Amino acid sequence: MKDYKELTIWSDAQALIKKAEEEGVKTLWDRKKEQEPHCGYCELGLSCRNCAMGPCRIDPFGEGPQKGICGADADIIVARNLVRMIAAGSASHSDHGRDLVEVLYKVAKGEASGYKISDSEKLKRIAQEFGISIEGKTELEIAQELALELMEEYGTKRKRLTFINRVPQERVELWEKLRVIPRGIDREVTEAMHRTHMGVDNDYISLLLHGVRTGLSDGYGGSMIATEVSDIIFGTPEPKISALNFGVLKEDQVNILIHGHNPVVSEMIYLAAKDPELNQLAQSLGAKGINLAGLCCTGNEVLMRKGIPMAGNHLATELVIVTGVVEAMVVDYQCIMPSLSEVAKCYHTLMFSTSDKAKFPGMEHVEFTPENAKEKAYEVVRKAIENFKNRSSSKVFLPSKEVKSMTGFSVEAILKALGGSLEPLINAIKIGKIKGAVGIVGCNNPKIKQDYGHVELAKKLIAHDILVLTTGCANVAIGKAGLQIPEGKDMAGPGLKEICAALGIPPSLHVGSCVDNSRILVIACALAKTLGVDIKDLPIAGAAPEWYSEKAVAIAFYVMASGIFTVLGIMPPILGSKNIVELATSGLENIFGAKFAVEPDPLKAADLIIEHIKQKRKALGLD
Ligand code: BF8
Ligand code: SF4
Image (cartoon, helix red, strand yellow):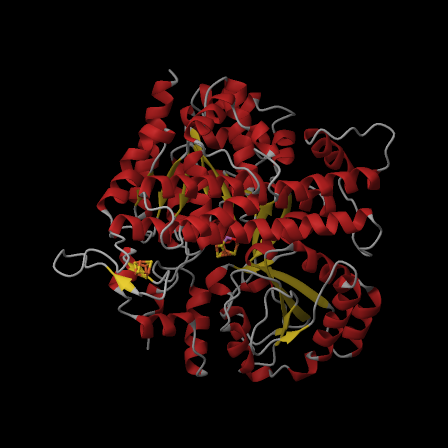
């Protein structure tokens, strides 16, 4: 018997963990227990298996070995491990971006039936940013040229990524001086792997600077491309009300969950789920209809654009199956626990993998390509409908009702809400009605009670008149807590409340999936440019209270390197190197004008951020 209340703040999730336990289904919390205590060397970043002379480890107490067989010390090993995390995270976001660029190219060539250009205005705007002349060209001609240009962003030819032009000059000059301006995305990731091979870069500062460069190639490269191209193909999000929670699943309908990150698959599932014929089939088999719901960042993508409700975040992905009402889960890639197919075996849920890059034991693989996606989506939805009859009513348990939440705050939507320019926001910041803004991003991690970090941090920040922007799994947490609807203003401080009421917006804005942190970068750059200052001077901060993923490390690095103070709720594996801890939590301030803090207690993390914002306001002469 577990102490369910210690695992998650939500009573519905607690009830589902209990149900899983009663039904003999292992969840991640059971496996976490089995893994404890975690390896101390790994936690400190002091183990290395980069070559076959090892593995090696450094004794943190100074009594055992202080060097690996090759002679690498604690600083080198910690730095190499961290840079490899950044490389993996950057590669993940960026490869997702590349898949979208390929879809854009195929749309232009007429080879991707089912997909189209949804935001033609944005297509033209981005094309112009890339120096493409749009005069006299058709939409598809522009799309083809832009796709080819974007492919170049991944390659070796470019000396710097094009979206760097969005960054304030002062920051670009700093990056130039430090030689961290990102070139091609693939180049930075490959170079990170090269440098961390035995006998290449053995200076921890030089290694970490390349880590920064790799992270920047994600933020201003892969992730930004993923966001912009998704908007072009699937539409730029606009504010809308949708719903969150296990309660979005419907007992009387065929429930299909879409999970992962890339909207390429889920948008086609959405089309198929709307199809009248398939809905009729569902009705003929005893269901009222087809209910589509999202998980994790694929969920965020379709929530933002289509208003598809969101069933849960990272730590809810096993529990949704335990409700017993899920006919099928369709996954693409990233953050999909391989345990899901094991959980599904205990229920009637069909599991479908869709990407050549992401196969899972126990899932049926239906490969989706831009050419066949529509047809495959119909195939999968049909199988889900036919599975409705296999649902066992004795296993059905929906412990909560859905919670309303507002979504869709793209940069364009925020500007529109502000009446077309950043001026009203800047004025509100200047007169102190809004003290500053904070991006709360990222995951769940069972090392922290699910969603406790997100919710408590967000509540305290808005109460102090700090506007919150959320992405990734943080969004579900903060949305469920009621902060992402206009009525959430009642939990905000008086200044923020007044602004929210005037604009009809919530005090916490959902800006998208994790690649959409690039939207936050765009706003930060635009704010700094409008004010004629560097990003580091703005009263803003970033936080990842419950991060788990290598992608979060890449994000943390590009956010910090952009000049934004970043607070992490989970300690990254760096404690084994005093030098790197000192650099991360203090030394970086002199280099990038921003640093990291690690604070698992969200209320204390909020204090750090509130104080930081106070200092920045003071330096700008605002208080
Ligand atoms: O990219 S927040 S758990 S789903 S890694 Fe994963 Fe973390 Fe969720 Fe989205 Ni982001
Ligand atoms: Fe050991 Fe060096 Fe090989 Fe790492 S790279 S495993 S420290 S010998």
